[in-house]
Length: 252
Image 1 (cartoon, rainbow, N blue to C red):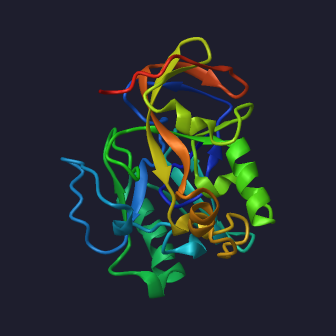
Image 2 (image 1 turned 30 degrees about the vertical axis):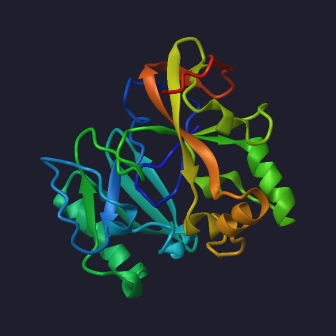
């Protein structure tokens, strides 16, 4: 399991987590960095497309960074070229300003306005309007790797849950199905994930080296990899938990 505390920045592995119904993972995409005025209102948070923020589709050099987020203090640490480049408490104006100054320099030629750290209590800066969990089938990634003839790191797809044991592309057969993770958490698979140019970026090197969306389209006739699921009953889940699938309940 992984979460991405700041949209576009490093993943954090989670050995276990408690999921709430109709919510994303705690602190997943809790923060974003505005790229040009977005008119985001933290008092009335709403969905905005990812192009309003710094993100890998257009800002590949974000993958050069290694970041760490402390959820108890909300301190974000940014490392670049094996050194600490910035640190700040994202709850304070001073801390946000420290992070913003770094990005103003690091991606200066890609900015449409001053970078601004954004946050709203309970909001997730997801790529979709609904708060969801993204699921990546590792066998599907392996199939894509075989087609590419080169290693494909599953972290390219920035998913929350990596699943092993399913056949390749089995996740697409689960539309409308409920899945149980661990003893109590129940999720409903609601949408395939259409992939964009962000997946072209190697998360280790920050180089665009594999045209993932075009490769998917060429080999499989679609640009999808992974699915979104909505948590319909919360509960604790942990790495290594079993996933069971109930019969699909497709709308008429």
